[in-house]
Image (cartoon, rainbow, N blue to C red):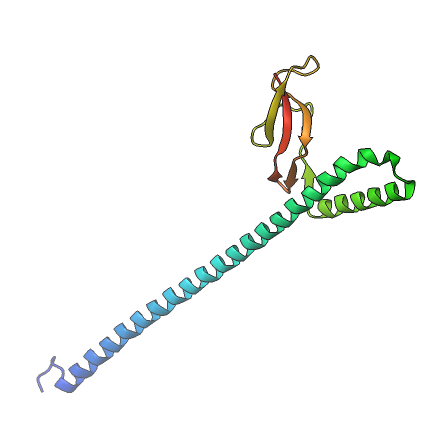
Length: 160
């Protein structure tokens, strides 16, 4: 054999080794991509589950707000009812308010506040000497926050 030249079998073995190294690199890159894809998938599933859970919670809370609206309309008319009925209805009303408060549901401030279309839904304009134009004069339906997100806008009348 000539010096500086490899034997044919050594050259074939080196080529096979280089091919194996290239295959190993390619397989490792595919493994890393698959790992990253799985991690992205896991995050997306977690995000979708959280979104779905929040949406379900929002739907239930909106339904409870309708019940609360019914209590708010009924309470002023309980003066003719026996005191035990009045106390019972008021206790249920308080319990519902506590439940909503534990879920971070709070009322939107309305009367006397400047009209904000992001928080208030105007259902009418009224002449008012007591309020400046553009100020909420009356709350027709209370609005609510869920944490710092608007759960339901307040339906209001605004001074013109």
